[in-house]
Length: 86
Image (cartoon, rainbow, N blue to C red):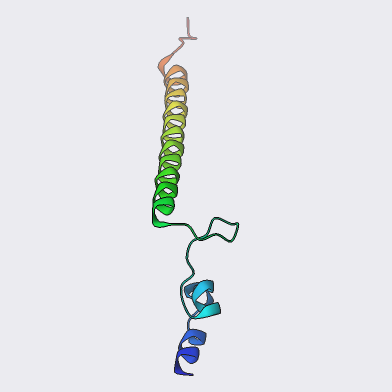
């Protein structure tokens, strides 16, 4: 009973659905009801990290290109001074 009170006193965002539902942590599964082995989880984690790293690198490259384009446009507009008095 004390554990139930402790769990209900926590905000919903701090309670894990796996812990609240069964009182224990759920193991990772592949979405088909099969529990992944440690090796499979490790491979999946490596793959996810690789994909996230590639996405960050791609975004960084895109931002650098946009920054360079903005700098060129700014320097092109500010760099030219026309003398209209002549």
